[in-house]
Amino acid sequence: MRELENKNTRDAQVRKEAWIGDTVLDLYARTYILQELGEMDGKMLARMTSNQFLSSIGNPTVVEAEIGRVYQSRGLEAGFAWIEENLLPLFKKQESNRTVARR
Image (cartoon, rainbow, N blue to C red; front, side, top):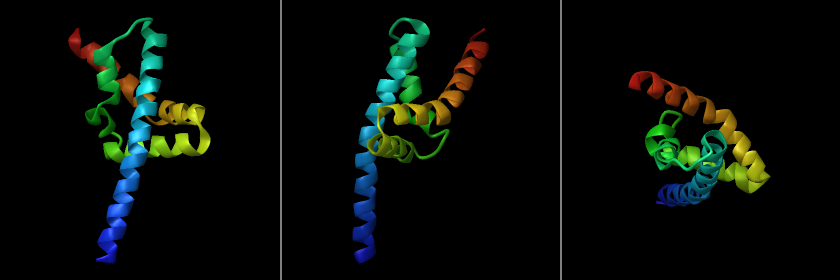
């Protein structure tokens, strides 16, 4: 019984961290899109922040929780740096593949 309570507590903590991480990722994605395209692109935003995209790295909740932990312990700049290092290269590759596939 105690193990189940501990697991539930851990799961709840991960979800809380992911909730924050999701917001950091969304802010990063919006900023990135505006810098790269000079305009809003909701479809690109959805692709960059989707669970489908995040699942190419790992469990989406766990990925967002990691972003949330980095943000909470080291700040927004560190959260953005984590995204640039761990998510952006794959996103750029997938976007490049989308462009080639549409031709």
